[in-house]
Every structure is written in C-alpha cells, then in structure tokens.
Image (cartoon, rainbow, N blue to C red; front, side, top):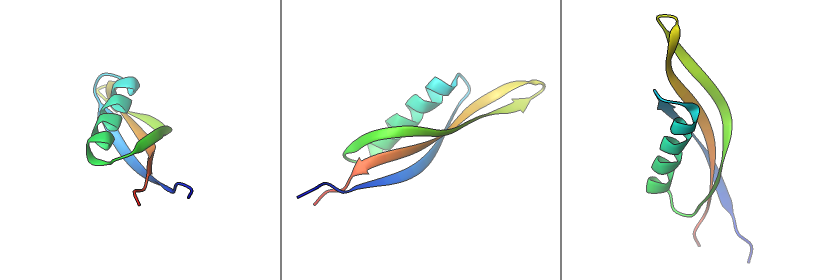
Length: 68
C-alpha cells in the first residue's frame, strides 16, 4: 500500500534571523505532528520598527505522513 501525506502551513517568527525562525517552526511542528517528512519555505518577510528590522517571519509548508 502507498503512503498518504498531508501538507499544512505554519508561520514562525524570530528576532534573530530567518534561519532561527525556520528552526523554531520545525521544532514546534515536530513536537505536535508525527511523521514529519519535510518543510518548504513558502514566504519570508520582516517587520520594521524605528527604521530597523524588528523580527523575521517565515511561512512553512510542512509535510507529514498520515498514519493508517
């Protein structure tokens, strides 16, 4: 029998970097979802406050395999 997976979109923020936002998102996804297979960075954006970057945000498409 073949495998079936689901893709869900999550958003994560960091005040440090895009890489840190990705790490935070993946850590959270793997703590809530079983059988996480991959993640795709769909979007990246920054928030600006006082003429400087305040935080980094990523939207991730997380793929996880459904259980039988």
